[in-house]
Image (cartoon, rainbow over all chains, first blue to last red; front, side):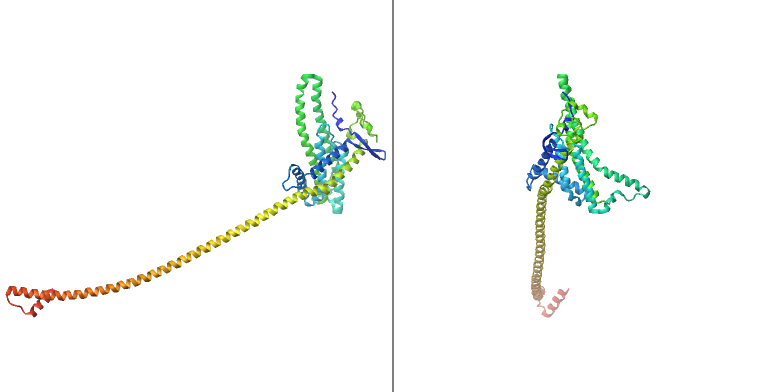
Length: 249
Length: 188
């Protein structure tokens, strides 16, 4: 019995769609789970009815809606509601795919850096373009915090600009690393159970209780992390967009 | 390093190759650059699809349901408020009516009491006058009766005195002197 905690992250092409340059574009297991996430969100949001007294599914849909709407209003004001569809899509996409990915034998989309980087860059460029389009050059005031003495301003500006351009890095790596590390830890601890059992027989099965308990505890933690990282990604998006909407913080 | 995806499928038997830093099959999958293009393309397709579904269908629908409920609740609350206002106004009108009726009743009571008092007073006065008249008449009668009686007493006394004198002395006394004696005695 060999533990291979990395295997779960493999990208398996299911069929080839075409070629762009010398890249092969395939419909992979990752694509499949993206489709699954979109399908689940669509079913949740569209098949849930519009009754005056909501049922269970409709309640979930409305709670998601109001949760994200309240997050945006609280952090970016009413103007931030312009980005409601984007933030809602990001949150639901990451949350649902993370929760699906936690089911054994499934694939977690956001355990791949390229995906989280792409999502973070969407946010980054949205902030940049909207900020410049709406505020013009005043947008760059976010790099010049007022109340800072002149002699220290170049240093502060340098740090502000650096942190601005590092945002997509931290934004994407946070989600990626959390999902990756969580799934590896789960796999390692779950693997111990089987490994002990197969290598030590009856003693091993008894000894396997401890890693099994740890796996259960970690599993609960990972469900929390799956939701929490989606929320963190969404709220950071809101905070970054708030800079574009109100650059004179 | 664009390899075909066949390479990525290789089993983990040659897992050691991940150490040589290359993008070989069996490397660390998240850093397998050959899979990036596929992932980016499918992410673009599915995220745009999701965005369109969310923006055009899901949020308007769910938001509409929430708004409809909000409107319904607000409408019901407003209706309840107007009904409450109406009932309060009715209560106020009732109380006003009650107060005015009460004051009217009091006024009527006072008036009738005053009237009754005045009437009773008038009746009492006439009765008293009648009684006083009767009393005066009675007193006059008593006085005349008394005067009559007194004059009778004098006559009787004079007769009695004359008779006594006659009995004692055998002489019939002079009427004038008897009368004078009786008068003196009565005055005495």
